[in-house]
Image (cartoon, rainbow, N blue to C red; front, side, top):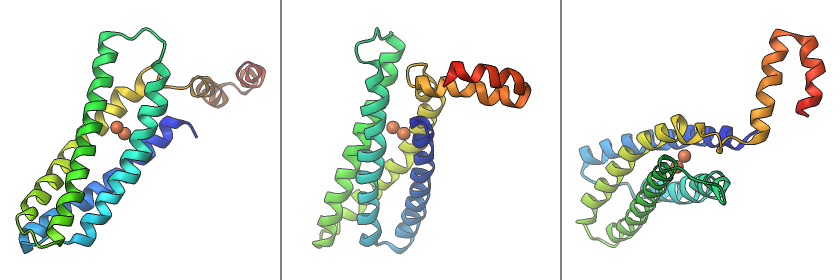
Length: 172
Ligand SMILES: [Fe+2]
Ligand SMILES: [Fe+2]
């Protein structure tokens, strides 16, 4: 499985958590209280999975492929926007965990801040994921050489098996 396929699959997992967050926020607003067990679990998910595991791959593998290469103004702007959104998500998750501890200690004013953080996390992910799948992951440098090579034989296999058999050696 190529890195981009893994990252896209991880987006679907993040979207599921975002949907849970939306449901939890709606219930919290109706009941007027915050369910801390959910908030702690969500903060752990966004820190460990979404940030360290998922954003870690995007920054540590994909963006690193540009190191030492000439970078256009558009590419620079794209990478800066992705990094800024990752930083905003990281800061929001840190606030979420800190306010959860304050709320647990009896600070009722933390409830409004927790809901505000949940709202911002819910809002930022759809656009972030759309930007990555429609632009970032489509950049020629983001697609590995192996992925580029393996696309053609699978297409050829459905069209001309003889050509495919002969040409496979050029791709393997
Ligand atoms: Fe990202
Ligand atoms: Fe992503």
